Amino acid sequence: MAKLILLLDDRVVNEFPVDAPVTIGRQSDNAVVIDNAAVSSHHACVYRDDDHFVVEDLQSTNGTFVNGTRISRRNLRPGDMLVVGNHTLLLDGKATVPPPAASPAEVRSPGAGETIFVDKRTMLERLAMNSDAHRKHQALLATLQDVEAHAKSAKGEISGPLGVLRVLNGHADKAEYSLEGHTSVIGKAKTSLVRLEGWFKPTMAVAITRNTQGYVATSLGGTTLINDQPISGRHELKDGDVLEVSGLKLAFSVKQ
Amino acid sequence: MRLRAAGRTDVGRVRALNEDVFSLHTRDGLFVVCDGMGGCPAGEVASQIAADAIVGALTSRTPVTDSRRVEDRGYLAQTVRLAEAVRHSNQIVFSRAQEDPSRAGMGTTVVGAWINGHVASIAHVGDSRAYLWHGDTLDRLTCDHALVEQQNVLLRALGREPDVDVELTEVLMQRGDCLLLCSDGLTRAVPDRALSQAFGDIRDPQRVCDYLVDAANRSGGPDNITVVVVELAAGWARRMATVFDAIRWRRTRWRS
Image 1 (cartoon, rainbow over the protein chains, first blue to last red):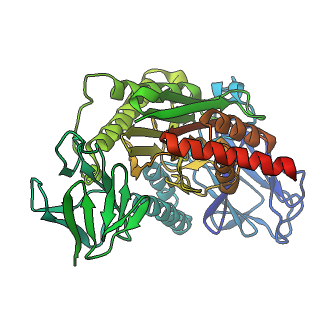
Image 2: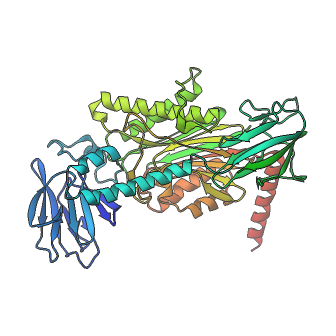
Image 3: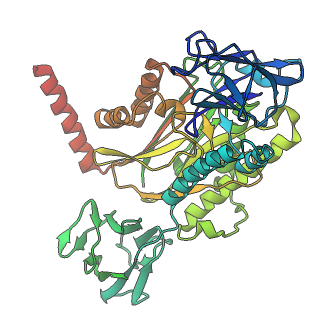
């Protein structure tokens, strides 16, 4: 199904299916309402004409622009940028004209809000076809990449100084453990970084999570002392902290 | 480790069809919420296939093909397995969409949690979310893969491309902590503050689910609503304290 994507300052504001004629204007009886002084009450209309889409200016005061040129009536191709006032409408390039028979999507959920999926690569290819609007599209793409980068940073290739646990006292299989992972467990569990052995040792005594700010220790079972103080909840680890877990004494330090 | 889990899904007040799916496997500590993409054909098929594929991959004995990827580095083995299961489900949804023209372009979001001991591994794609109730605060664990959070523009979805980026999170659960998995039908209708309040007032997972679904419907139910709540059951001392708190609260209310 073809869609018009409404953008303001390169952010997606909303999107509208073009299965029926879509009117654009300031008044509330339009399908796309843009409440802005630069937009006429009934500014423009987008509709399907047989196998293609058409935009028509409804004698607006400030005009309707397609890829930078003022138009009165013009055929639209996928990826065309329609400018009305400060807003931009993008005809979804994936839009293919559906066959006359109603598509399954229309039968199932008529008029219901849809979810669209933006595939950046095809969008780029589609958008690059149109050199006039290319610059505008670049800006939109940059926004898309921004959001993706933000999502990536939350997931984090973790950076920042590396924490190390050094065994001061007690039985352990190594003298030093570096806390490289997102989560490091001290306990009897198989996935533990520091394996505790013995019948009465807790499966998970303490877990240390790593984030961009540093390391946080969470007590999970048994008694855990940090600098001789018992902890019950979460504790932000600082360089030089000493952990005591089930007879094991560990010093936390940060490698710069 | 004892888990108490409940889930509820509801069509909402606007849509004709529920395309959300949830799956509870309390014994395996595995919980999945999928939100089929509305407006695309077979959204409800995509969400069901994805949920089944993830559960199938993690509960069957035959291991999923384990290709260690760079982006999985630093995560615990079970988290990587969860990620592999989600990628596997993506391939299945994608290939089913290729085989059947009536399902072409189907897609779904997913948020899945796999709890092993105190460690919850969370994988998500799209705008379904996970939250952790800890102490008396509700923390959001996931970052939506959507362009602007209020809009239905997904940057990532399951089943739309042969490969998918899965975002991973590891979080520690202490006794009494709750995990909330939900579709955007809940988070668009109910603000985070109200979600947090629901956990503060009600502790029972099933009653939290019922309350939140009703709350989303009261504010219009614009989309399908799915809520899954998992509690890492508190020890008897903590539970008694909660009961006493509840009695005290009722009494004070009785008196005033």
